Image 1: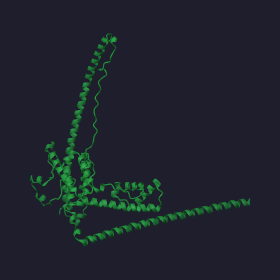
Image 2 (image 1 turned 135 degrees about the horizontal axis):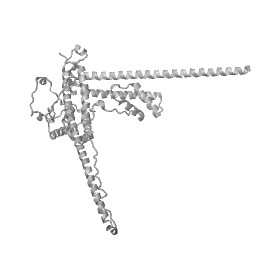
Image 3 (image 1 turned 90 degrees about the vertical axis):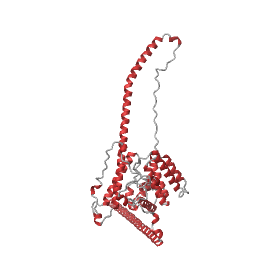
Image 4 (image 1 turned 120 degrees about the horizontal axis):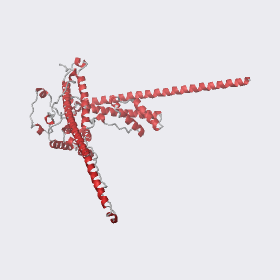
Amino acid sequence: MAVAPASLADKIIILNDDDDEDEESPQPSCPASTSSSGRHTKKVSPLKALQPVPTHITQSPFASAKKDAHVLQAENHKLFTEFVEHCSGPTKDCPEVLTFLQTKHAKACPDYLSSVEFRNTLGRCLTRAQANLSKTFVYINELCTVLRQHATKKRQTLTKVEPSPSTSASSTLQPTSLMAKSKDKTKGKMGEKAKGQEVAAEEEQPSTSGLQEDNRQDQEEEKKAKRASRKQIAYLENLLKVYNDEIYRLQQAELSIDDLAAEDSLYIQEHKLKRKMMKIYEKLCELKGCNTLTGRVIEQRITYRSTRYPEINKKIERFINRPEAQTNPPDYQDILQQVLRANERHNLCLSRKQLNQIAQEAFRETGSRMQERRQLDLAYNFGSHLTDKYKAASDPALSNPSLQQKLRSNREMALSRLEEVITKYAVKQEDAEEQERSKRLEKDKEVKVASMFKRLKEAFKRDSSSLEF
Protein backbone atom coordinates (compact mmCIF):
# COMPACT_ATOMS: atom_id res chain seq x y z
CA MET A 1 0.00 0.00 0.00
CA ALA A 2 1.06 3.62 -0.41
CA VAL A 3 2.66 5.31 2.53
CA ALA A 4 1.64 8.85 3.43
CA PRO A 5 4.37 11.44 2.78
CA ALA A 6 6.53 12.60 5.64
CA SER A 7 5.36 16.20 5.52
CA LEU A 8 1.67 15.27 5.81
CA ALA A 9 1.58 15.96 9.56
CA ASP A 10 3.09 19.44 9.05
CA LYS A 11 0.72 20.41 6.22
CA ILE A 12 -2.57 19.80 8.03
CA ILE A 13 -3.89 23.35 8.45
CA ILE A 14 -7.48 24.39 9.05
CA LEU A 15 -8.31 27.96 8.03
CA ASN A 16 -11.28 29.83 9.51
CA ASP A 17 -12.05 33.12 7.73
CA ASP A 18 -15.40 33.75 9.46
CA ASP A 19 -15.18 36.63 11.88
CA ASP A 20 -18.66 36.31 13.32
CA GLU A 21 -19.08 33.70 16.02
CA ASP A 22 -22.54 32.82 14.75
CA GLU A 23 -21.14 31.77 11.37
CA GLU A 24 -18.65 29.31 12.78
CA SER A 25 -19.18 25.75 11.71
CA PRO A 26 -20.79 23.68 14.46
CA GLN A 27 -18.60 21.02 15.99
CA PRO A 28 -19.89 17.43 15.90
CA SER A 29 -21.35 16.31 19.16
CA CYS A 30 -22.01 12.82 20.43
CA PRO A 31 -25.64 12.24 21.49
CA ALA A 32 -26.18 11.53 25.15
CA SER A 33 -29.06 9.09 24.62
CA THR A 34 -30.47 6.89 21.91
CA SER A 35 -33.64 8.95 21.55
CA SER A 36 -31.75 12.15 20.70
CA SER A 37 -29.60 10.35 18.16
CA GLY A 38 -32.63 9.17 16.24
CA ARG A 39 -33.97 12.65 15.58
CA HIS A 40 -31.26 13.72 13.17
CA THR A 41 -30.30 11.94 9.99
CA LYS A 42 -26.80 12.41 8.62
CA LYS A 43 -25.22 11.43 5.36
CA VAL A 44 -22.51 8.84 5.90
CA SER A 45 -19.67 8.49 3.46
CA PRO A 46 -18.63 5.01 2.25
CA LEU A 47 -15.34 5.26 4.15
CA LYS A 48 -17.16 6.07 7.38
CA ALA A 49 -19.65 3.26 6.81
CA LEU A 50 -16.85 0.71 6.59
CA GLN A 51 -15.44 1.73 9.97
CA PRO A 52 -16.51 -0.38 13.00
CA VAL A 53 -19.23 1.03 15.20
CA PRO A 54 -17.55 2.44 18.37
CA THR A 55 -18.63 1.10 21.73
CA HIS A 56 -17.81 4.31 23.56
CA ILE A 57 -18.07 8.08 23.12
CA THR A 58 -15.81 9.06 20.27
CA GLN A 59 -16.48 12.79 20.49
CA SER A 60 -13.48 14.98 21.23
CA PRO A 61 -13.63 16.30 24.82
CA PHE A 62 -12.89 19.78 23.49
CA ALA A 63 -15.65 19.84 20.89
CA SER A 64 -18.32 22.52 21.28
CA ALA A 65 -22.02 22.15 20.53
CA LYS A 66 -24.79 24.56 19.59
CA LYS A 67 -27.31 23.15 22.05
CA ASP A 68 -28.81 25.32 24.74
CA ALA A 69 -27.05 25.35 28.07
CA HIS A 70 -30.10 24.24 30.06
CA VAL A 71 -30.68 21.25 27.77
CA LEU A 72 -27.07 20.09 28.16
CA GLN A 73 -27.23 20.66 31.90
CA ALA A 74 -30.37 18.53 32.20
CA GLU A 75 -28.83 15.72 30.13
CA ASN A 76 -25.59 15.85 32.12
CA HIS A 77 -27.47 15.80 35.43
CA LYS A 78 -29.46 12.77 34.29
CA LEU A 79 -26.28 10.99 33.19
CA PHE A 80 -24.56 11.84 36.49
CA THR A 81 -27.54 10.44 38.44
CA GLU A 82 -27.31 7.24 36.39
CA PHE A 83 -23.58 7.00 37.14
CA VAL A 84 -24.19 7.43 40.90
CA GLU A 85 -26.95 4.79 40.87
CA HIS A 86 -24.69 2.35 39.02
CA CYS A 87 -21.82 2.90 41.49
CA SER A 88 -24.03 2.60 44.57
CA GLY A 89 -23.91 -1.21 44.36
CA PRO A 90 -20.11 -1.79 44.29
CA THR A 91 -19.56 0.98 46.90
CA LYS A 92 -21.90 -0.31 49.63
CA ASP A 93 -18.98 -0.80 51.99
CA CYS A 94 -17.72 2.78 51.41
CA PRO A 95 -20.76 5.07 51.06
CA GLU A 96 -18.62 8.13 51.78
CA VAL A 97 -17.07 7.77 48.31
CA LEU A 98 -20.31 8.72 46.57
CA THR A 99 -20.85 11.53 49.08
CA PHE A 100 -17.42 12.90 48.19
CA LEU A 101 -18.22 12.61 44.47
CA GLN A 102 -21.52 14.47 44.89
CA THR A 103 -19.75 17.19 46.88
CA LYS A 104 -17.24 17.69 44.07
CA HIS A 105 -20.11 17.80 41.58
CA ALA A 106 -21.87 20.49 43.63
CA LYS A 107 -18.69 22.60 43.82
CA ALA A 108 -17.95 22.34 40.08
CA CYS A 109 -18.34 25.30 37.73
CA PRO A 110 -21.90 25.54 36.27
CA ASP A 111 -20.52 26.32 32.80
CA TYR A 112 -18.54 23.09 32.83
CA LEU A 113 -21.50 21.04 34.14
CA SER A 114 -23.53 22.23 31.14
CA SER A 115 -20.78 21.53 28.58
CA VAL A 116 -20.25 18.76 26.04
CA GLU A 117 -16.82 18.07 27.52
CA PHE A 118 -18.33 17.02 30.86
CA ARG A 119 -20.96 14.91 29.09
CA ASN A 120 -18.29 13.03 27.12
CA THR A 121 -16.14 12.45 30.21
CA LEU A 122 -19.13 11.27 32.22
CA GLY A 123 -20.34 8.99 29.43
CA ARG A 124 -16.89 7.44 29.04
CA CYS A 125 -16.60 6.75 32.77
CA LEU A 126 -20.11 5.27 32.88
CA THR A 127 -19.46 3.01 29.89
CA ARG A 128 -16.21 1.69 31.36
CA ALA A 129 -17.72 1.25 34.82
CA GLN A 130 -20.59 -0.79 33.37
CA ALA A 131 -18.13 -2.94 31.42
CA ASN A 132 -15.82 -3.60 34.39
CA LEU A 133 -17.35 -3.52 37.89
CA SER A 134 -14.05 -4.32 39.60
CA LYS A 135 -12.61 -0.93 38.57
CA THR A 136 -15.52 1.22 39.72
CA PHE A 137 -13.39 3.11 42.24
CA VAL A 138 -10.86 3.93 39.52
CA TYR A 139 -13.49 5.64 37.37
CA ILE A 140 -14.97 7.43 40.40
CA ASN A 141 -11.49 8.76 41.15
CA GLU A 142 -11.08 9.87 37.54
CA LEU A 143 -14.39 11.76 37.63
CA CYS A 144 -13.51 13.39 40.97
CA THR A 145 -10.19 14.55 39.51
CA VAL A 146 -11.93 16.15 36.52
CA LEU A 147 -14.51 17.88 38.75
CA ARG A 148 -11.74 19.13 41.03
CA GLN A 149 -9.95 20.68 38.06
CA HIS A 150 -13.10 22.59 37.09
CA ALA A 151 -14.15 23.66 40.58
CA THR A 152 -15.57 27.15 41.09
CA LYS A 153 -12.82 29.52 42.17
CA LYS A 154 -13.74 31.78 45.07
CA ARG A 155 -12.66 35.36 44.45
CA GLN A 156 -12.62 38.18 46.95
CA THR A 157 -14.87 41.05 45.98
CA LEU A 158 -13.34 44.46 46.52
CA THR A 159 -15.81 47.13 47.63
CA LYS A 160 -15.13 50.68 46.59
CA VAL A 161 -14.92 53.08 49.53
CA GLU A 162 -16.98 56.20 48.98
CA PRO A 163 -15.26 59.47 49.89
CA SER A 164 -16.49 61.03 53.09
CA PRO A 165 -18.24 64.39 52.91
CA SER A 166 -15.96 67.37 53.16
CA THR A 167 -15.41 68.88 56.51
CA SER A 168 -16.38 72.24 55.13
CA ALA A 169 -20.06 71.13 55.03
CA SER A 170 -20.12 70.54 58.80
CA SER A 171 -20.67 73.78 60.60
CA THR A 172 -19.23 74.48 63.99
CA LEU A 173 -21.29 75.91 66.75
CA GLN A 174 -20.17 79.32 67.79
CA PRO A 175 -21.12 81.30 70.87
CA THR A 176 -24.22 83.48 70.52
CA SER A 177 -22.34 86.54 71.66
CA LEU A 178 -19.90 86.47 68.71
CA MET A 179 -22.40 85.35 66.03
CA ALA A 180 -23.55 88.88 65.17
CA LYS A 181 -20.00 90.19 64.83
CA SER A 182 -18.77 87.37 62.55
CA LYS A 183 -21.85 87.25 60.30
CA ASP A 184 -20.32 89.24 57.47
CA LYS A 185 -17.03 87.31 57.69
CA THR A 186 -18.76 83.90 57.49
CA LYS A 187 -20.76 85.03 54.46
CA GLY A 188 -17.58 86.06 52.68
CA LYS A 189 -15.84 82.78 53.56
CA MET A 190 -18.82 80.73 52.41
CA GLY A 191 -18.89 82.63 49.12
CA GLU A 192 -15.18 81.98 48.60
CA LYS A 193 -15.65 78.28 49.43
CA ALA A 194 -18.55 78.00 46.99
CA LYS A 195 -16.43 79.55 44.24
CA GLY A 196 -13.57 77.19 45.08
CA GLN A 197 -15.89 74.18 44.94
CA GLU A 198 -17.20 75.26 41.52
CA VAL A 199 -13.66 75.61 40.18
CA ALA A 200 -12.72 72.19 41.65
CA ALA A 201 -15.81 70.60 40.07
CA GLU A 202 -14.87 72.08 36.71
CA GLU A 203 -11.35 70.69 37.09
CA GLU A 204 -12.63 67.24 38.15
CA GLN A 205 -15.05 66.86 35.23
CA PRO A 206 -12.42 66.26 32.54
CA SER A 207 -10.51 63.84 34.80
CA THR A 208 -13.61 61.67 35.45
CA SER A 209 -14.50 61.69 31.78
CA GLY A 210 -10.98 60.57 30.98
CA LEU A 211 -11.31 57.69 33.44
CA GLN A 212 -14.58 56.65 31.84
CA GLU A 213 -12.96 56.65 28.41
CA ASP A 214 -10.08 54.56 29.74
CA ASN A 215 -12.54 52.10 31.28
CA ARG A 216 -14.42 51.83 27.99
CA GLN A 217 -11.21 51.19 26.11
CA ASP A 218 -10.20 48.53 28.63
CA GLN A 219 -13.59 46.85 28.33
CA GLU A 220 -13.39 46.89 24.53
CA GLU A 221 -9.88 45.40 24.65
CA GLU A 222 -11.07 42.68 27.03
CA LYS A 223 -13.98 41.84 24.74
CA LYS A 224 -11.64 41.64 21.75
CA ALA A 225 -9.23 39.44 23.69
CA LYS A 226 -12.05 37.12 24.80
CA ARG A 227 -13.37 36.90 21.27
CA ALA A 228 -9.91 36.16 19.90
CA SER A 229 -9.33 33.51 22.58
CA ARG A 230 -12.68 31.84 21.77
CA LYS A 231 -11.74 31.72 18.09
CA GLN A 232 -8.34 30.34 18.95
CA ILE A 233 -9.90 27.69 21.20
CA ALA A 234 -12.34 26.69 18.45
CA TYR A 235 -9.48 26.46 15.94
CA LEU A 236 -7.35 24.32 18.26
CA GLU A 237 -10.28 22.02 19.05
CA ASN A 238 -10.90 21.51 15.34
CA LEU A 239 -7.21 20.85 14.82
CA LEU A 240 -7.29 18.23 17.57
CA LYS A 241 -10.12 16.45 15.78
CA VAL A 242 -8.20 16.49 12.49
CA TYR A 243 -5.10 15.03 14.14
CA ASN A 244 -7.20 12.39 15.89
CA ASP A 245 -8.73 11.28 12.59
CA GLU A 246 -5.30 11.17 10.97
CA ILE A 247 -3.89 9.04 13.81
CA TYR A 248 -6.85 6.68 13.45
CA ARG A 249 -6.10 6.34 9.72
CA LEU A 250 -2.42 5.62 10.37
CA GLN A 251 -3.25 2.97 12.99
CA GLN A 252 -5.62 1.17 10.61
CA ALA A 253 -2.93 0.82 7.95
CA GLU A 254 -0.99 -2.44 7.60
CA LEU A 255 2.78 -2.25 7.20
CA SER A 256 5.26 -4.57 5.57
CA ILE A 257 8.81 -5.26 6.73
CA ASP A 258 10.17 -2.64 4.34
CA ASP A 259 7.70 -0.07 5.65
CA LEU A 260 8.79 -0.76 9.21
CA ALA A 261 12.44 -0.25 8.27
CA ALA A 262 11.75 3.13 6.64
CA GLU A 263 13.15 6.25 8.31
CA ASP A 264 9.75 7.97 8.17
CA SER A 265 7.38 5.08 8.76
CA LEU A 266 3.77 5.41 9.84
CA TYR A 267 4.71 4.75 13.45
CA ILE A 268 7.04 7.75 13.42
CA GLN A 269 4.35 9.91 11.83
CA GLU A 270 1.87 8.78 14.46
CA HIS A 271 4.35 9.64 17.22
CA LYS A 272 4.88 13.13 15.79
CA LEU A 273 1.14 13.75 15.61
CA LYS A 274 0.67 12.65 19.20
CA ARG A 275 3.40 15.03 20.35
CA LYS A 276 1.68 17.85 18.48
CA MET A 277 -1.64 16.93 20.10
CA MET A 278 -0.03 17.16 23.53
CA LYS A 279 1.26 20.67 22.75
CA ILE A 280 -2.20 21.70 21.54
CA TYR A 281 -3.73 20.27 24.71
CA GLU A 282 -1.34 22.27 26.90
CA LYS A 283 -2.17 25.43 24.94
CA LEU A 284 -5.91 24.77 25.35
CA CYS A 285 -5.48 24.33 29.10
CA GLU A 286 -3.60 27.63 29.20
CA LEU A 287 -6.36 29.45 27.28
CA LYS A 288 -9.15 27.89 29.36
CA GLY A 289 -7.31 28.44 32.63
CA CYS A 290 -7.49 24.82 33.78
CA ASN A 291 -4.91 22.35 35.06
CA THR A 292 -2.95 20.14 32.65
CA LEU A 293 -3.40 17.03 34.81
CA THR A 294 -5.39 14.37 32.98
CA GLY A 295 -6.12 12.02 35.89
CA ARG A 296 -3.85 9.26 34.61
CA VAL A 297 -2.54 6.64 37.01
CA ILE A 298 1.06 7.61 36.23
CA GLU A 299 0.37 11.09 37.68
CA GLN A 300 -0.72 9.74 41.07
CA ARG A 301 1.71 10.13 43.95
CA ILE A 302 3.18 7.05 45.66
CA THR A 303 3.19 7.15 49.46
CA TYR A 304 5.85 5.19 51.35
CA ARG A 305 5.48 4.36 55.08
CA SER A 306 7.12 0.93 55.36
CA THR A 307 10.06 1.65 57.67
CA ARG A 308 9.84 2.68 61.33
CA TYR A 309 11.85 5.86 60.66
CA PRO A 310 9.78 8.79 59.30
CA GLU A 311 12.92 10.58 58.09
CA ILE A 312 13.85 7.68 55.80
CA ASN A 313 10.25 7.31 54.59
CA LYS A 314 10.03 10.99 53.68
CA LYS A 315 13.40 10.91 51.88
CA ILE A 316 12.50 7.84 49.78
CA GLU A 317 8.98 9.11 49.00
CA ARG A 318 10.32 12.44 47.74
CA PHE A 319 12.91 10.65 45.61
CA ILE A 320 10.57 8.16 43.88
CA ASN A 321 7.95 10.85 43.10
CA ARG A 322 10.32 13.06 41.11
CA PRO A 323 9.40 13.65 37.44
CA GLU A 324 12.71 12.04 36.40
CA ALA A 325 11.81 8.81 38.19
CA GLN A 326 9.05 8.07 35.66
CA THR A 327 11.46 7.90 32.73
CA ASN A 328 14.46 6.61 34.72
CA PRO A 329 13.32 4.36 37.62
CA PRO A 330 15.70 4.25 40.62
CA ASP A 331 17.90 1.22 41.21
CA TYR A 332 19.19 -0.32 44.44
CA GLN A 333 22.17 2.02 44.72
CA ASP A 334 19.93 5.09 44.44
CA ILE A 335 17.67 3.86 47.27
CA LEU A 336 20.71 2.95 49.37
CA GLN A 337 22.18 6.44 48.91
CA GLN A 338 18.91 8.01 50.09
CA VAL A 339 18.89 5.80 53.18
CA LEU A 340 22.54 6.65 53.96
CA ARG A 341 21.93 10.39 53.58
CA ALA A 342 18.88 10.28 55.85
CA ASN A 343 20.91 8.35 58.44
CA GLU A 344 23.75 10.88 58.37
CA ARG A 345 21.56 13.98 58.34
CA HIS A 346 19.22 12.98 61.19
CA ASN A 347 21.83 11.05 63.24
CA LEU A 348 19.84 7.81 63.36
CA CYS A 349 23.00 5.86 64.34
CA LEU A 350 22.07 2.77 62.32
CA SER A 351 24.62 0.08 61.52
CA ARG A 352 25.68 -0.77 58.02
CA LYS A 353 23.79 -4.07 58.10
CA GLN A 354 20.56 -2.36 59.17
CA LEU A 355 20.92 0.27 56.44
CA ASN A 356 21.41 -2.41 53.78
CA GLN A 357 18.39 -4.35 55.00
CA ILE A 358 16.20 -1.21 54.99
CA ALA A 359 17.42 -0.31 51.50
CA GLN A 360 16.66 -3.79 50.16
CA GLU A 361 13.12 -3.81 51.53
CA ALA A 362 12.49 -0.27 50.29
CA PHE A 363 13.84 -1.08 46.83
CA ARG A 364 11.60 -4.15 46.51
CA GLU A 365 8.45 -2.36 47.62
CA THR A 366 8.97 0.87 45.68
CA GLY A 367 9.97 -1.05 42.55
CA SER A 368 6.85 -3.24 42.67
CA ARG A 369 4.56 -0.26 43.28
CA MET A 370 6.08 1.78 40.45
CA GLN A 371 5.83 -1.24 38.15
CA GLU A 372 2.18 -1.73 39.08
CA ARG A 373 1.48 1.95 38.39
CA ARG A 374 3.10 1.75 34.95
CA GLN A 375 1.16 -1.41 34.08
CA LEU A 376 -2.18 0.17 35.08
CA ASP A 377 -1.39 3.31 33.10
CA LEU A 378 -0.52 1.21 30.07
CA ALA A 379 -3.75 -0.78 30.40
CA TYR A 380 -5.91 2.35 30.69
CA ASN A 381 -4.08 4.42 28.05
CA PHE A 382 -2.77 1.99 25.48
CA GLY A 383 -3.24 4.59 22.75
CA SER A 384 -4.58 2.43 19.91
CA HIS A 385 -8.03 2.22 18.32
CA LEU A 386 -7.45 -1.48 17.66
CA THR A 387 -8.14 -2.32 21.33
CA ASP A 388 -11.41 -0.38 21.63
CA LYS A 389 -13.46 -3.56 21.37
CA TYR A 390 -11.39 -5.40 23.98
CA LYS A 391 -13.24 -6.48 27.13
CA ALA A 392 -11.69 -8.06 30.18
CA ALA A 393 -14.54 -10.57 30.35
CA SER A 394 -13.47 -12.03 26.98
CA ASP A 395 -10.08 -13.19 28.29
CA PRO A 396 -9.51 -16.77 27.03
CA ALA A 397 -7.82 -17.69 30.31
CA LEU A 398 -11.12 -17.30 32.16
CA SER A 399 -12.71 -20.13 30.20
CA ASN A 400 -9.59 -22.34 30.02
CA PRO A 401 -8.38 -23.59 33.45
CA SER A 402 -5.20 -25.15 32.06
CA LEU A 403 -4.17 -21.88 30.39
CA GLN A 404 -4.92 -19.94 33.55
CA GLN A 405 -2.84 -22.35 35.63
CA LYS A 406 0.04 -22.12 33.14
CA LEU A 407 -0.01 -18.32 33.24
CA ARG A 408 -0.08 -18.34 37.05
CA SER A 409 2.87 -20.73 37.25
CA ASN A 410 4.84 -18.58 34.77
CA ARG A 411 4.19 -15.51 36.89
CA GLU A 412 5.33 -17.27 40.07
CA MET A 413 8.45 -18.47 38.30
CA ALA A 414 9.22 -14.96 37.01
CA LEU A 415 8.81 -13.43 40.47
CA SER A 416 11.00 -16.09 42.11
CA ARG A 417 13.76 -15.63 39.53
CA LEU A 418 13.59 -11.87 39.93
CA GLU A 419 13.92 -12.31 43.69
CA GLU A 420 16.94 -14.58 43.18
CA VAL A 421 18.65 -12.02 40.93
CA ILE A 422 18.03 -9.19 43.41
CA THR A 423 19.30 -11.29 46.34
CA LYS A 424 22.35 -12.43 44.37
CA TYR A 425 23.55 -8.92 43.54
CA ALA A 426 22.66 -7.60 46.99
CA VAL A 427 24.89 -10.28 48.56
CA LYS A 428 27.66 -9.48 46.08
CA GLN A 429 27.40 -5.83 46.99
CA GLU A 430 27.65 -6.63 50.70
CA ASP A 431 30.63 -8.93 50.13
CA ALA A 432 32.40 -6.30 48.03
CA GLU A 433 31.85 -3.66 50.69
CA GLU A 434 33.12 -6.02 53.42
CA GLN A 435 36.23 -6.77 51.37
CA GLU A 436 36.88 -3.09 50.82
CA ARG A 437 36.42 -2.41 54.53
CA SER A 438 38.82 -5.22 55.50
CA LYS A 439 41.40 -4.02 52.98
CA ARG A 440 41.10 -0.51 54.34
CA LEU A 441 41.60 -1.75 57.92
CA GLU A 442 44.66 -3.79 56.94
CA LYS A 443 46.13 -0.83 55.12
CA ASP A 444 45.58 1.41 58.12
CA LYS A 445 47.16 -1.20 60.35
CA GLU A 446 50.24 -1.41 58.11
CA VAL A 447 50.55 2.37 58.10
CA LYS A 448 50.35 2.45 61.90
CA VAL A 449 53.00 -0.30 62.24
CA ALA A 450 55.32 1.47 59.79
CA SER A 451 54.94 4.78 61.61
CA MET A 452 55.66 3.03 64.95
CA PHE A 453 58.84 1.43 63.58
CA LYS A 454 59.88 4.79 62.21
CA ARG A 455 59.44 6.47 65.58
CA LEU A 456 61.36 3.67 67.32
CA LYS A 457 64.20 4.02 64.82
CA GLU A 458 64.41 7.76 65.36
CA ALA A 459 64.39 7.27 69.13
CA PHE A 460 67.20 4.67 68.86
CA LYS A 461 69.30 7.07 66.81
CA ARG A 462 68.84 9.82 69.38
CA ASP A 463 69.83 7.47 72.22
CA SER A 464 72.93 6.23 70.36
CA SER A 465 74.09 9.79 69.61
CA SER A 466 73.68 10.78 73.28
CA LEU A 467 75.75 7.75 74.40
CA GLU A 468 78.62 8.76 72.10
CA PHE A 469 78.79 12.19 73.73
